[in-house]
Structures are given as C-alpha cells and as structure tokens.
Image (cartoon, rainbow over all chains, first blue to last red; front, side, top):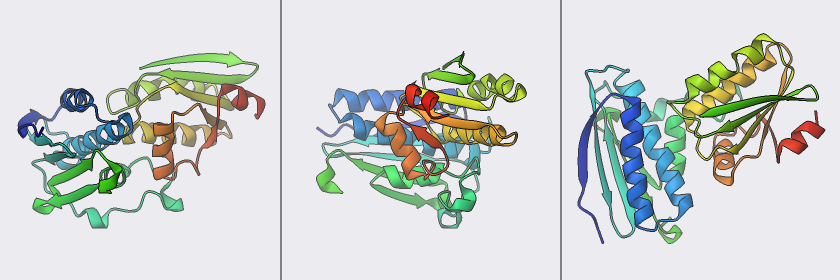
Length: 139
Length: 110
C-alpha cells in the first residue's frame, strides 16, 4: 500500500536529522523492507540531510531543510531541499581517486549516488530527489 | 557512542560501540587525543559493535589514520560488518586502511 507523502520542514540541527531519519527507518522496518535496503536508505537519507545542513545552509540556524518522503509498494522516494546557494554535483572531485583518498571530506554525494537507485538534483543543486527500490529486479 | 581503550601487549585496541556519525564523530576524535599525544604506534580500531558509519565517521577515521601516520604509527581496522565494509569499498577506503578480519588477526599481524 502506498502511504501518503509526508512533508516536513526542520531546523538546521543535526539532532533533528537523526529524528527524521529514525522515523523513516521505522516506517520501512514496519513494512518489512530488507535490512540491506534499509541500511542504504539510512545512509543516503542522512548524507542528503547532512549536506543540506552543513554545505547548503552552511550551519545557519535560521535556515530550514524541507523533506518529503513517500513509501510506495516498490520504493521509497525522498527529497531534501535546503535554503543555500546550490551547487553543481558534476563539479565535485572524485573522492575515490588516489590523490583524494586522504582528504577528510567529499564522500557524502558519492555515497548517495552509489547507494540510491535514482538520484536527481534540482533547483540548482538545492534539492536532491532520491529513489530506492525494495526489490533488485528494478535495478 | 562508547570507545573502550585497552593495551594488549603493546597494541592499543580501541573497541567502539554505537554509530559513528555526524553527532558522535567529535567524541570519537576526542577519544584518540591521548593515543596520538602518547604516540602509540600500534593501534587497532575494532568496529564489531558499530552498525552504522556515515561520511563524517569515515572522515574521522581518515583523520585518525593521518594523525597516526604523522609519527609513524600504524592502524588496523578490525571486524567490520558487511554493510560498513561495503561503505569502505564504495569509497575505496579499503585501499587506504589495513582492514583485518578480527582483533586476533590484528594483534597477530603487527
């Protein structure tokens, strides 16, 4: 059964990040989604929230992050939008190149792109829309 | 997040319990301050009881590795769950870190 889309707007606070993530993970567990899929969604969702708060909103406590999630029979669709200036995901350095391995940052978007099945950046990079299918036949 | 630190025959074994993420990474970093200050040169991070690591956690582990390497220290990472190991593989950090099966292998290969 497809659940209604949930939309929420949260303050730029990493503890709230964990709260909204926990709610989505609980919903997926309740639906009987495989643990491996849930792990990927967990990482992908929190990386998107973290990017929005730290890189998009630049830790500004006045700014907000808007989140929409929808769980259908076959997938979870998540969007995360910040109030920053946006970015070009195509211009990010590849963190897996030898010269970048020892750099501390730069892995968030890379993880999102590898763990989620569909990823699109909208509104100049301020919004990311991600889909994770529950069954591998959709890959 | 809890970090239990023990000396086992000259090897510093750091067993972590909990998630290593945006909220706990600062505490993880802090728990290595003394190890770095004392220039411990054989260090194992045991991730047996860590079920979740995000990019902040990966960054923290890279920072610890760099700090240890700065004085010639060596680091082994032991007992990763399949999913956490998958994150190391996706980001190619498995090429950077010396990853071993478990604490016993870490202790016997220093």
